[in-house]
Length: 374
Ligand SMILES: Cc1ncc(COP(=O)(O)O)c(C=O)c1O
Image (cartoon, rainbow, N blue to C red; front, top):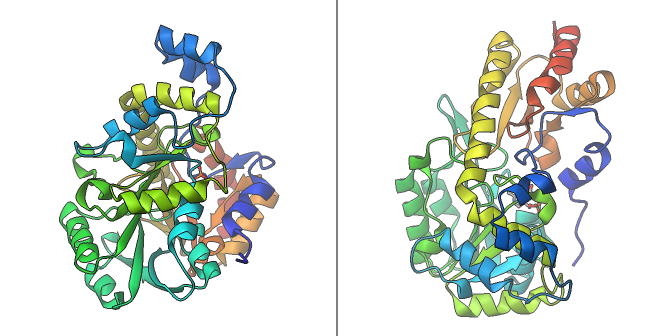
């Protein structure tokens, strides 16, 4: 399988650690090691400090799998969970389950690997595209239904959605799951931005709670503020699908990182505090972003995310967004991700509301906007 460059990763590799500021990150402010250890019970702390650095269990630490299962409704058990590095949680199921010629439907725009691996395998990929109206970003279930064919094998979704921040209404989500069930599709649901809904009542059920043939990707990278642990998980109640994924994992990481597993356990034992921390940072940054974009509403249009950490901003001024982003980096040291890097046409860039330094980054950004666009 040949894959083209993963453009968003290429972009972040070039600029993430060299640009003085950024306004497009997708993670929530990462914790430090002392901060996460402060959450540990005495026994977990002792476990971490005395840890044996051997290989770990391939399916994942049993207690960690139990803690991941416990984030979900009854019926999801530790045996339904496979620990993975988050990105591996896309690579593994696609490679394990898809074959050349399969028909796949993927949400678009989206994180490139969600559809690119299928394309690389030789699948026929149809895109379920976002729409944007007065009330913000939307995904039309009727349009999705029209994409389904007799030979469709997998439907790939991502709610809360990167990059728009869109979230379906619960009834729409249930319709979508019902559609997958009626057509016997594997429903691959990337839920890595789940657990940081601004209104917790809007949190969708996890697809794995509703449908046996769902495969859910979750992880600690975004709303738990722990991307450096590289801990994620796949969940499915279908033993056959789980078996295929477990076999494929032997060709990628084989097993998880021992220290990360214990730190992940500490995180999940404090899941509410950590996700609340993320919700608070996003809420505070949304206020700052609102006042920024209100001051410049003749230049930008934004629909704020209902959940997760990211949203899309339309540059309505008469300037190409790639040129605008290049200038922001060159002249103000601010990294701005044009949505084109995510292969999404239109004059959009992504805003990340999860980092504590967003208000500081908006200062040089504003100076650049004033100098360039007025
Ligand atoms: C929708 C989505 N899924 C999966 C991932 C992979 O997470 P990680 O980068 O921690 O491997 C990302 C990362 O940006 C993402 O946005």
